Image (cartoon, rainbow, N blue to C red; front, side, top):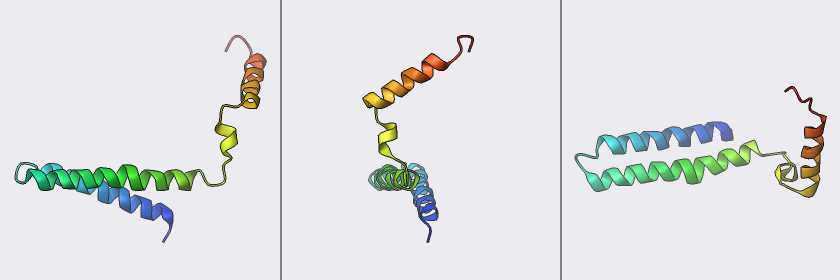
Length: 85
């Protein structure tokens, strides 16, 4: 199974759990909080890290860090831009 479909499954299940929790909140408060909490955990502690790992595969983290070399590159880029932009 592809990771993309697995992440989508987790996201949909989490959103479904949150929606279900809000719909049963009037009847059973503790159980509703449990569904809402599990949906939130699924989104932010499972689906989001998996998505970030999948999307960052093959990218160099050094390119996104604020190092002296990257600061110098940004300064050179600013100097080359025309003033009327």
